[in-house]
Image 1 (cartoon, each protein chain N blue to C red):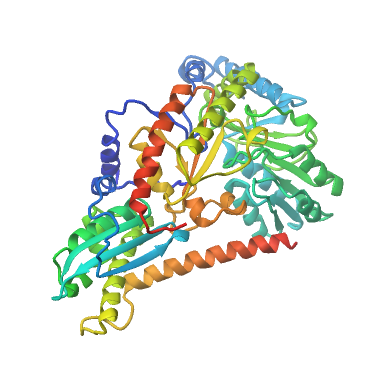
Image 2: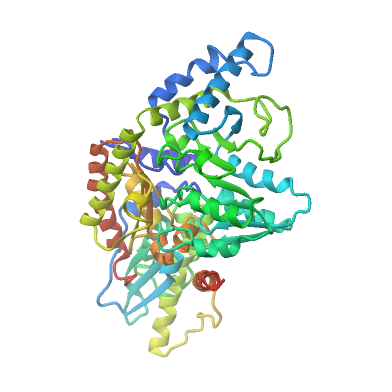
Length: 170
Length: 407
């Protein structure tokens, strides 16, 4: 059962109660997912991007905790009207700062939100068959973290299953 | 950080009704218990019970009377078998480490179930690093220990077995007498411990007829104060202290006895046992009202643990699919309903409740689980309020989840 005290900031609580840009976007240019239900944290980001590579609208859906919902809300709000190149520069640290700080065990929530955004941007250029100079070949910290979290959940689920089967075969 | 918490508390102002159901993790103290404890802080019996003056003798008398009452409810041979500790965690540590420490060779097998509380699981893991081997016996989909696997696990090398009488998370009532008999049949020298914290005051049992050597009980789970519990150790069973210092009335736990808490624990026991049948049927009625109310009002839910007579009368544990548990605890708190979740979202490790995964719940089912326990002091109106708040909370959070998770 949950035992770590989570002194969430007022900002997180406010965005948890009234998240902005919530919901699936039917006419999205691109969408991306970070996390999975196994890790208990999952975000889908939807971006509407115009011909000048500017984000006109961003929305999200989140299966996650209060910090996950709040950080997703912040990121979708921030990127509105931004050029993709500038949106790419948003870091999880700046998101964490904007929500008034995250408890250490919740860092990954902020990372996941930025990870989802960057995946969406990559997906967009892949779809267009373009490769802007500023877009790094290698995965960035936030993307790697998201990937690591997904992998970890998979490994844990697998281990659990193996242990279960193992004990059945005693 | 404290500033943040102050703001969080402010967000709760103006609640019209509050219902606390997180009895697993801490509890409010029954008013009669507080009343019984008060004189013992500064009016009487504040002395050290081993010293030769009036306040000391008063304390000795109060502690012995309390132990006598609890020994009676537990069905002990004598009050000497009741050893007060600062709680369930300490009693479980004392039981396992105390039994292991008198085995000089540091070898042998320790058998537990997959769904024991962490104060058993982690201690067993610690002992496995010291040389003991630990076997975790699997449970079925409702949390019942697989008795065939238990038979296979216990052998001549087995020195200790520890199985909860009632599971703390999903309320499974284990056939503890049968478990103890299986262990003793295969190896009469093995020491059998049971964590009875969720059984004491909830299901009828007498330690003498169970064939167990040690049993843990906890005060706050019956609305007594926190910071006090006890370990029943059967006469003739030898375990060692795990802490050293001045020994007082408690041969297995050094230090100055906390007389007000001991008195409170005994009073809480009295209140539960004097009207045992009435209290239990009240809890069972509220439990079923809550479970059925949730199942009837909310779709895509799963009850964790058994139904009916084999479930503890106070336990409600339900998984809400497509609804993250930690977010749900916060949403409910803002509406005055206080519960806990088996979600991993408070841990970097991403590992949800080991009890829920052991009974075969998928991670996403464990993440959306909510644990609630009702007490003799909860009312029908409390449950009605929970049933009013909960469907709205789940609906709002499922709205945020949207199409992200498709079952």
